[in-house]
Image (tube, rainbow, N blue to C red; front, side, top):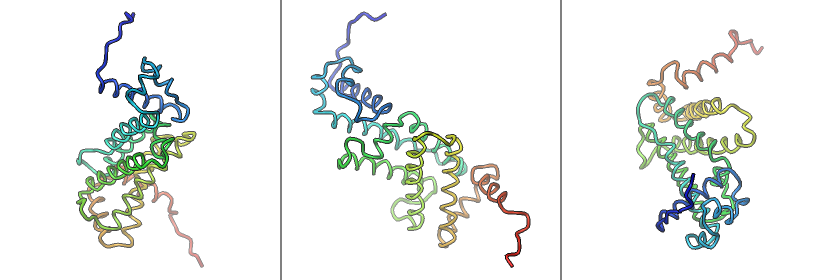
Length: 238
């Protein structure tokens, strides 16, 4: 039972409370559908007091996106231990945890939401993508200063693929999440393999990756799935 006595919050504590309340609301509904009145009610304060801490809905929205972007970037942090395939699978699990928990908020972050065109919002999105890119290079043991051009293309393409896949998945969740996480890890291996077919340096990186992969790991499973698609006897095209 509550006593009805409210504890007075400091300025920064109140700001953080409002950001948390806004993020929760934005995570469950489109930011366009959330009003300042709803945010104030959820925080247990008046509408004018919300404006005391934030000039308007856009500034509060951007603050909520900042918190979401920081949290999402952390989902790609993984100790550099064990085989790469298992590490990437754990990363995808945490990434989809975030997507699952913050569907509308994730969509708003990646698509811009009501702040579309805002340089600050675009910068936050780029920060998340860059953080993910740098973490993957770290997993590969590649320096960030000047990675091979084809490797940069593979990693950035994969980060973009994970993002677009998650956005599409949110529209109905028609594919089991676990399967999609594994498929994205397989997609990384496939992108790297195709690039290796065109570039000696990428081939060396791929060989190094596969040397540490167990046969029952995600990459080994991909090899098994592809082998099962090849018929025992290839028909003569003549």
